[in-house]
Image 1: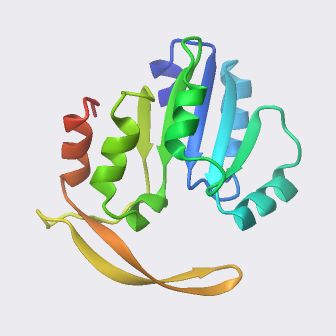
Image 2: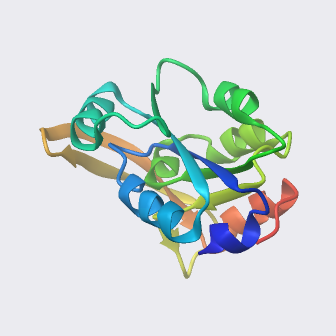
Length: 169
């Protein structure tokens, strides 16, 4: 519902970075229909997740997939920024794997594009005042992929980065 109240345009473009196989798409379609707002979705993820998403979701003129090796997020943000559309960036759990994440966010958000940023499902340490790291075993439906270094975000670290970039919470 935040989209409905925050986006003055009749068209919302959502760029879902690390969007997997399109898990948000059914919810966005329902939202679009109920609120009479056109939602265009761009998902950036691995080739395997995109393949799964295309098989599950089928053809949809309001859905575009990009392989994470095909185009950079920064390129896509610049290409997709239009005055007649509200642009929303969703960064899900993938942010925990990006090092250094603060530099990544500063780089892609330096131009205040997109208007809205939603960061979800991240490892936040409620009792920590400094970021930390841990090692996590990465397992998918295809089996164990290996181990990865992941960010453990201090209680207010993401809030500070976003405020420094000029975004309100």
